[in-house]
Image (cartoon, rainbow, N blue to C red; front, side, top):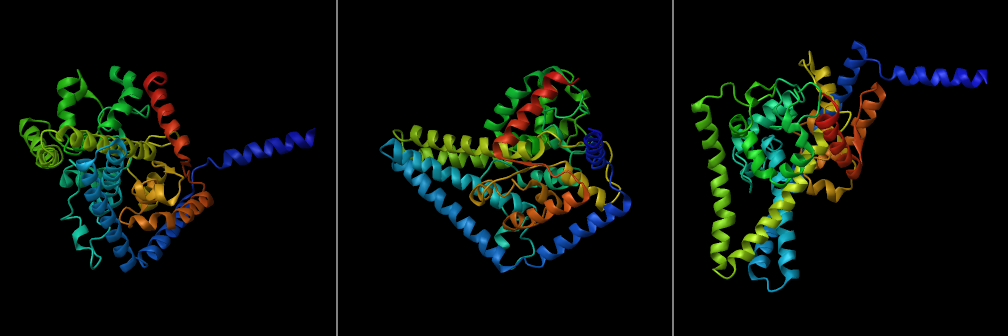
Length: 382
């Protein structure tokens, strides 16, 4: 019995020791290993990556053409549904596997990938690219989960940490998670241009007093006009292309069928894209910060412990833009997407070696975790 109690005590001590902060020497060694891994993978990037993204772009383009053709000429539910599915595949690949990484600059220095350069690439979405790059690349990726800097901590109205002031509308957070996912494309445009902040200031009493990080420094009338212009310059052409051009081509008897098919494909894309965003930054055990990291080593830790992964197969990873590897994407944001699954096991091993939390789970586990976390901070924690 004494030996059993001694073993139990030792195991408790060992368990607690894993929670101790990393020493400065360990932190430097941890960062050095990640830096070495980054250099090793970057040295491999070349024609193979260019060929990969061109192939994905072709599949996306062919999926759109075939999908819209089937929707347009469909005479039965099967051909219409097949067209909707193919259009959904196009929207997913274009927005996540291609756009997300292109706008990060993953292809900026690769010969033959000029059309995917971050300065010129335009996606089939309502999201303004320039606004997205500033909010996402500069604010979110530089200051991941820092309360005063990262607008993605709340994404406009969410609360997933006790560091955010609790307000009456957080009681509806589980429902808001669903509604936000349904319209995630337009919501992302509103958040990226910060027009959402103006809408919330008008619609929600006391919103301007909350400790929410925004994109803009000032919220005056000129800033409102700027946000409106940025939001409209991409949303209007996008809506015209999808909901005026193609229904018009279908004629008065086919317009409804085409419009419904396009809407269904977009809703499917929005739900999956929204869930990908949620599972990358809203699961349990995600950390939030009050201060910025002092050095690159601390930045690595904050990026890793402020993100979470979804364990899945290769096909799922391609469909969701390899953003199920959110941890790897955050520490190596300019890495081409087809390299993320290659580095993931090694990043995980390095984290385990130094006791850095590597949050990963199945799709069901991570989605469940998001809603459990949302309910906790909406109803249970003040």
